[in-house]
Structure formats: C-alpha cells, structure tokens
Length: 451
Image (cartoon, rainbow, N blue to C red; front, side, top):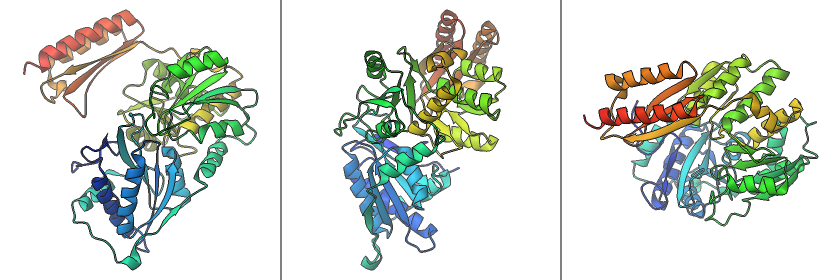
C-alpha cells in the first residue's frame, strides 16, 4: 500500500498555520477533492457538504475549502457548526458525494483538521484519500465560469439532525422526571444536544454551551470531566453527559458523581440488548479496552474482539464480523444499527434507553462490570524497532503474564507517530500491576535503547 503524504488515520490534523493546516493548503485540498468527486458523478458536477466545530479558524478554512471546490466545478452546501456525526448523516440524506468536517475533535482551539465522509456516511477508504492526494500535487486550474460550483446554506441542519437523533430510540421513550447536566465542551453540540434531551422531556442543565471560538475543550467536555462531576453533585442531578468538541465521543457521570467511561457504557448497552432481545451478537473494542469489560461480556455469553486503536479499525472489524456495536474507552461508540459512525448524542440515547429499560440506575448497572487497574508507561527509544524480536523483552513479558495468572494482560505497542514503546499492564491487583509495568518498562528501555 502506498504511504499517504497528508492523511493520517483520522484525516488531516495539526496546529493552525503550520504544515497542512493553512488556508493555502485548504484551498488546494478543496480543489483536489472537488476534482476527484466530480469525476465520480454522472453529471460531472457533484455536491459536497461542509460542516465545522466552533474553533475560530473554522471560518477561514471553510472559506478556503469552499473556494477550491467551486473552482473545481462542485456545488457546496454549508451547514455551519455541527457535530461530526451530523455531517455524516446529512451527507447521506442530501445524497451528496461527500461530506467535509473541519475539526480537531478533542484538541485545543489552536489545532484544526479535516475529515471526509463518503456518500454513505463512512470514512473514506485509503485508496480514495490517495487519489485526492495525487490531485493536490497537480497544478490548480479553474473550470469555465459557466461550470463553476454554486453554494447554498442549509438553514435547518440542526433541526434535521435533532429529529434524526430522537428517531434512534422508540417513539414511546421519554426522559420525563430525569435531571441531566449536559456538557457540550463549548463545541459543536452546544445548540444540538441540550435540545435533543429537552425535547424528550428531561430537565436539562447545560454547561460548556457558550463557544467563543477559543474555549472549545477548555477544561470542559469528555477530556476534562471535573466541571461536569461538580455540576452533577451541586445540581443533585440524576446523570451527567459529556461530549467532546466535535460531538463524536460521550462519557457519563452517575448520580454519585462518578465518571463512567466508554467501556462501561458499551457494557450497559450490550447487556440491555442481550437481556431484552437476546441479540447482541458481539462487541468490538480495542487493544486498550479494559480486561474487566471483556470478562463481564463473557459472563453474558457475548463475544468480544479487539481491533487496533482508532474508530476506523473498530468499524472495519465490526463490518468483518457482522456486529453492530463497538467502540473505545474514550467514549467513541458506534451503534451501527442506527448510524454509520461514532455519535455522542445517539450513543447517549442508547445508554439512557438501556438504563430506563433495566429499571436500575447507571450507578447500579456499572457494578456488574469490574474495571481492572491499568497502568501504562511510554518508553522512548532511539528509533522505531521491532520489539517482537527481542528475546529478553519476550522473556520478561512471559514472566509478567505468569504472575498475572490469567487474570490480567500485558501489551507492548509501538507508537505509530513517534519513537515510543507503550508498555501497558492490567490486572486485579493494582500493586502488582504497577510493579510489573515498572519492571517491563525497565527491561524495554535497557534492551531497546542500547542497540
């Protein structure tokens, strides 16, 4: 497979003004994408939807992409600040050739990036990204004025997406009598998520819902849940819900003020599906999913499989196995029975429905799954090396696994972006886990930095 020059595992991302995250590059990227998708359209014109999160740089990049697409002869539909999964949904419903998301997800405001969705609302295949990259290296031209693309703004995008979210749970479902604190991370969900829960009858207290272009993910949202925890306790709320800046991740806080991560939320959904329908065929997690999650699913006779870290790989393994539920401990959850990508609001509704159906509280439900202590140390090495070939490291891993006695895991994983070996151990005994992680990190460092 040819190595990609610009696209990473989740689009193009970086600091604004550096590398590919400049207006000049975005102009060329829009033109290159427009050239590719126009050729795939029978009319030779095509239509692409552009959405963004609330970063101040989003306006600049939206304009640059729009200009490049129009110059390539492609029509553009602008939807403004909207969650990433909303763009995937609207790309499908408007029968567009592609959707473009301007977002750096959970990163701070000074970063930004670009993600693409296909006409089916899924991530673009590698081969399509490579074709777009080829066009980037071609001198830019402009189609004849009579063939320039046209631009429209979709003014009812938020309303359309809100109705879609509500349609993913039964029409009889409501949240009357439930007090929710909803943390929107000053991000793309600020004008969507509170409305969804409010329209379903919840008493909603919204925080992190006043974006100013500079405060996205700034000590709020799923990556900084302390403010949500404090608010749930202060408001005496039943639950708290935290999204990240672009709205594709979700974490919960139970009524006791305890954080509930993606593994636990996936467990709640899977348990409900198995209990009520007997139809949870399996769940896909990642190499970093907690072992306690895997064992809890095993007790329910629910198969479990691990993919590489990243929602792209989770989705690929779900498709391979024909399963409809998967995700990461970060809260990126994919419910493939109702949508095509990770969706924070839809996942939250699935969890809320499962809680209501169980007749229990989230605090009680999470006790059915025991999280194992997990420790990770990053060991910096001189260069990327094949750790699997090192006999001393392999011997140390086997010794650690023997001490864990089948009730723990050891994972040594090279970073894909820097010369670092991630040493992870998890097990029932936190003290043993910490000791084994330190020892393995010492062995890796002594073996992998001296060569």
